[in-house]
Image (cartoon, rainbow, N blue to C red; front, side, top):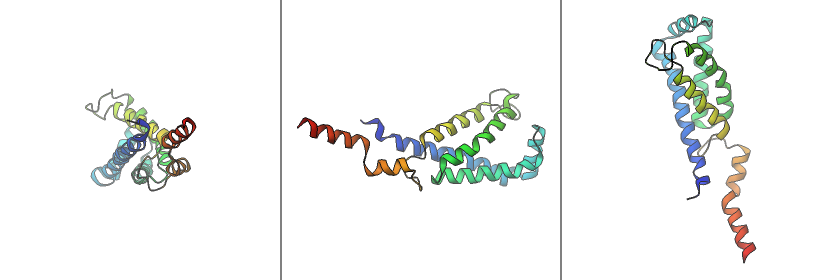
Length: 154
């Protein structure tokens, strides 16, 4: 089995899971918790209350772009400072999510997944294919070199 052929599909699964995580956080803030409650939470964590709306909208827009595969790397890069703030806000609470206020483990894992998405890209079935992916779809690397090697040997 050629493992290079599954990389685009693995990147797609990462993209879909990551986008779903961002969308769920945005919907929790916008629909379940209410923005005044999110603002109060951020204020208790030492951040200004008006940051609640930009945070929720950034999570919503980033989640949509990541799921659809439209400039997903850019969206993930834009979300990294938000994750750094979340990681700092939760550091004093311990590592697990079961503690009051939530621990730092979930933001750390989300940050690692986001960094991995920035590195791997959007993968298969993305609505906007980057230049490298477009070139790869025209001339697959593995099959091109296998055919070239076969011609040289014969």
